[in-house]
Structures are given as C-alpha cells and as structure tokens.
Amino acid sequence: MKKAVTTKKNSATKTDGASPSKMIDGRIKELGDWRGEMLGRIRSLIKDADPDVVEEWKWRGVPVWEHDGIICTGETYKAVVKMTFARGAALEDPAGLFNASLDGNVRRAIDIREGEEINEKALKALIRAAVELNGLKKKPTKRSA
Image (cartoon, rainbow, N blue to C red):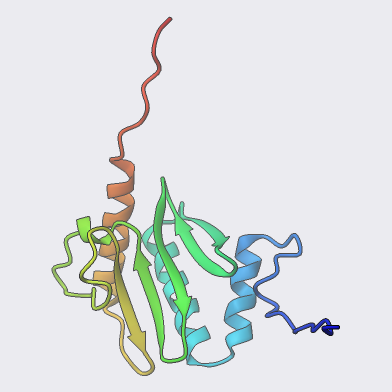
C-alpha cells in the first residue's frame, strides 16, 4: 500500500480568495532577495507606464499585467527575472531590451539578472507600445438582424 505524501505548497501559488495584486505582493515578499526587489521594481514601472493596467495571477502562480489583453508576465527563476511580452515579436525594440525568446513568432522576453540595470525609459516605452498594440486588436462588430 502506498503512503500518501503531502508537500508544503508555496504560499504564493494558492489564492485562498486573495486578489491578484495581493498574490503578487506575496510573491515579492516570499522571494526575499534581489528577484523580489526586481519584480517589485518591474511592477512599479508597468504601473507608471500604464496606470490603467490590470494585475492578474495565472498559470499556478505567474504575475500577469493586462490592458485589452496580456501585456507581459513576470516570472522568477533562480538566475533571472523574466518579463515575457505576449505580442513582443510585433513590437519595435529600438533600445534592444529583448534578449530572450527571440526565435518565436509571437512572444519576446527580457531576462534580467542580478545586478543588471534596467533602462527604465525604454522599458516604459515598450510597455506603452504593447498596450497600444493590444488596443489595435479588431473589435467584434455587432450584426444587425
């Protein structure tokens, strides 16, 4: 007979009815290192660039920022904080911020390592461009009867 094994779940992966913003707060606090600080900084830059951004918590614990669709996600790994732009391949990146997921047809990502500086002006411009691109999506038209 197999014995049931229980594992301690990451506190930020269970929602327990908390708002997505509270879940992101929890992730930042839970990390407790440079990754948490960087995720918090990225979050602040996103909110500065788009005050109407909506925070979500998806896929078992990934912070997501949306405005007329997904702008980007904020994933944390051992060596990087990754910002994945849902439609990044369609965005101009004159500052060359995208440095990961460059081969795909849709997404692009920015991997930020410990100690790296963020070009805040360029990142905010990229976020605003992503919001603008999302706003250009064709809206369904109502058909008359």
